[in-house]
Length: 86
Image: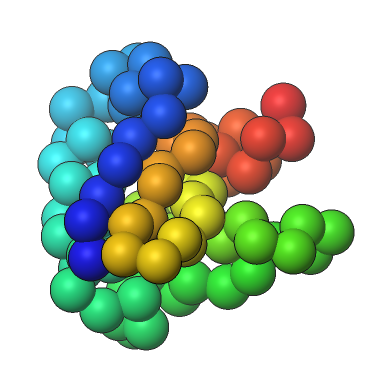
């Protein structure tokens, strides 16, 4: 699948520590090849019909939507921030 990034995702990505950026890049590659990759632990976000959550690591998350042939990355950040809660 193709990957698209919102301006908010890009802005938040650049604020992440370099090691977390590297982990995020790795997870995005896994996501583009296999939504069900075990390290991503993708799941639908409660309260949203089309927003998904993926895991960068134990502390960082990213959100995305799935369209026909494109995954659009919405947010990335420290756990609740990545979910748009802060």
